[in-house]
Length: 113
Length: 113
Image 1 (cartoon, helix red, strand yellow):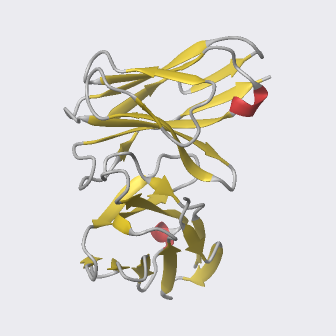
Image 2 (cartoon, rainbow over the protein chains, first blue to last red; image 1 turned 30 degrees about the horizontal axis):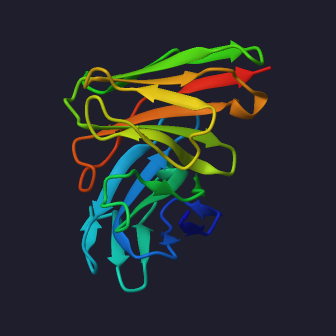
């Protein structure tokens, strides 16, 4: 079942922060995050494998709450280059972890100067 | 540069025609996937492969067939194209079905008229 992403879209000024959420109705084995710019392929950002795991760089990080079956992506002090559509991809235990990611519908992020 | 290469990049088909999309990766990845992307729908899994000679159905497999005769190649076939198959098709590969991020190809934009 497709994970639900929120918000669907967000407009920020350069330097502002954003949080993108991804929630699932099924128990999750892992969560991936990707960014896609218009007309391009999705690009892998990070993967979270363990409940409670937090990952990322100084300005782009993510957390995974296994019990709540959700993950959040944090963009701090956003830059113009952060603009794009962000997708979470989830993997459930039922498929043994190898039957492909199920992606959310995406969150459109627009950064204005 | 190492990565995933998709051919062709663009194609227009008439209803009922057939075609094959080719995906080639040079990273020695075991896992390969075919997704379609439609506006507002995110990425939906068509078929996937966990190794040479294996294929399996994803979320939206109807109207498509696949083959993985060589580890580096994953072919997606449309036997009788329909307007509903108008979409952008992305191939992806991963070294691990569970713990690895996906590397996507640049996509094939297919229009069926």
